[in-house]
Image (tube, rainbow, N blue to C red; front, side, top):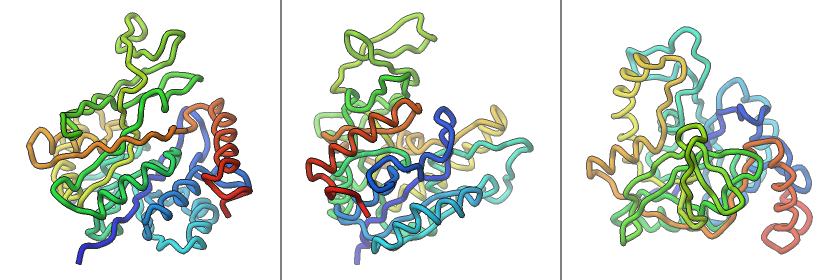
Length: 306
């Protein structure tokens, strides 16, 4: 019997540009955090089990807030821990390392809690909207020939008016299968549209507002975990030699390696919803106003989530 899809939530990181623990900061009516909305949307899409990937340093605060509310919601809650010393045999974190090992390592660290089920992955501090969860749950629940999936968003629905953002710009084929994801690390809106630079602002190139970008809402079969584990040793060998304090093993890197090897296909499912996050503190009022409007229009209960 096929296992029901599980939702894995990457919540171990701290927002360096924003400061503080974004995952649990109130942004909605009644004190709801962004993650409360994600769990609400995931639950009504069909998810019944959630794996929170955290670190022990935030465990008490996390479990006392969002974790406690999730427990009361009726979801089955599991925890996994992305710690610096959670590495394959023969490896140890270098002296002075504080930075987590990256999103692919976070998912690998949760492999036992995911338990061989198909799973979706999200960032804890991103608001994705209801559509993305329904798209990825239905895709995973159906199984079929392309078990991996990415929920893409339109670039114009993801930029910040308060500074540059990084986005994974996607290329798809005629069947809406992912061909490539290229990280653009400085994308900004301007008077005539949206553009990006790769040379510190010396030159700029435009991007269309309807360009599909990755916001780290993915769906995978359990074979993703095997692929992540297979690549982890190589990553550590190269990364520890080149940049021992800052190298990161990113989730899309595993996807790209599988695409290049021809061992996976990734269906791109495009959400019409607007994405919100708090990259900068100035983003928070816009997010709060948007959530209040979504309560008012019936997307969420009239007054509060809980």
